Length: 119
Image 1 (cartoon, one colour):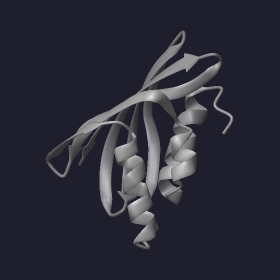
Image 2: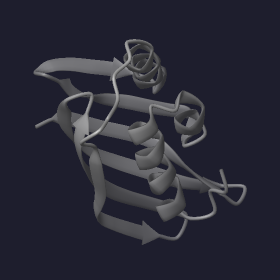
Image 3: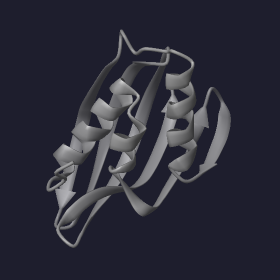
Image 4: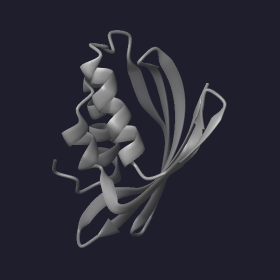
């Protein structure tokens, strides 16, 4: 993935989520990224590996995101940091709001934190 802008990272994240592509999604996250949020009312605290493992399980179960839609609702970039909100629907039959923080390091943008909730 060519991740020279926050938009390209977020687009790769949305595309990888749609396609249940663990490898593509993994390239979106910083090695020290964190993941927190609520999944159907239950707290989730950890790293993106939790999400990546779920993507693998969902794909292995034969789930396809036929009605998937995602869009960047807002994006703010200030120097080498950025924040964004993504609205996602139809991901394994669920809808999410993702609050992303990104950082540019050595010329490469990546997601450093993902805070999410099912809606």
